[in-house]
Amino acid sequence: MHVDNPAFWRAGAISTVIVMSVVLIMLTIDTLAVISPGGTHVPPYAVINQHIDYRFDAKRGSDVPVITGSEPFFGKAWEQAGAEALIDKGKLVIQSRACMGCHTFFGNGAYYAPDLTKAWLDPAWETWQAITGKATREEAMAAFLMDPEMYRTWTRTMPNLGLTEQEAMATVAYLKWMAAVDTNGFPPNFGRMQTKQ
Ligand code: HEC
Image (cartoon, rainbow, N blue to C red):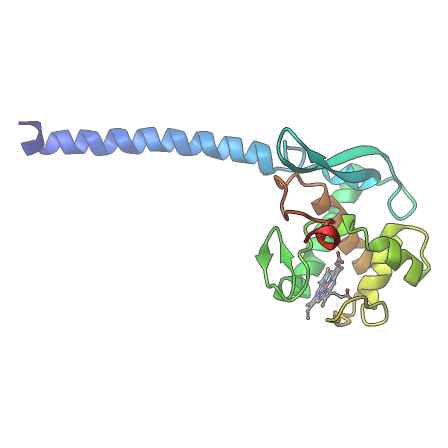
């Protein structure tokens, strides 16, 4: 009987490990192709130089970011390396101020304040542009981030986290890049909360 023979179980264990290792490697390669900047779902960092829209894709049944023509970011076009350095800095600012203690990114974090995954696309920035008197969305966001108590729009107020101008600019770059990530429609109904029953 095979089952009485330890060699049978050893061969079974070894072949399972080999097959599963191959599957794991294939899944890792596939995942990296999806989540790396420039991959199928994550845009390259230089996307901050482009206009980002968010439209419903009937075939996929969810909203997808639509990246169109060029749009200067803080008045200029950023080289790939400069854009990457700026977004890296933005990530460090976000970590240093523990934004996730109140907000969620890709659904991770706390539920005290709005999810920031698509914050760049929030139609409310038009109101914020009017309140802050800034000509562009990125400038309005930076102004808000540097003094959220002055430009509050909600029942809960975001505290002033002491962001410098450079830090606010880097944070906005991170938020714009993140908004261009194809999240398979997360968060659902984004931007249509007002009209939802
Ligand atoms: C203590 C909780 C708290 C922390 C920490 C916090 N926020 Fe906020 N944030 C809020 C609240 C509350 C609002 C809503 C404020 C309003 O609309 O006036 C908000 C609003 C925002 C908005 C506007 C969202 C939108 O689309 O309408 C952005 C962007 C934002 N925060 C970014 C950040 C970033 C970046 C950090 C870290 C540097 C951060 N927040 C840290 C509480 C917080």
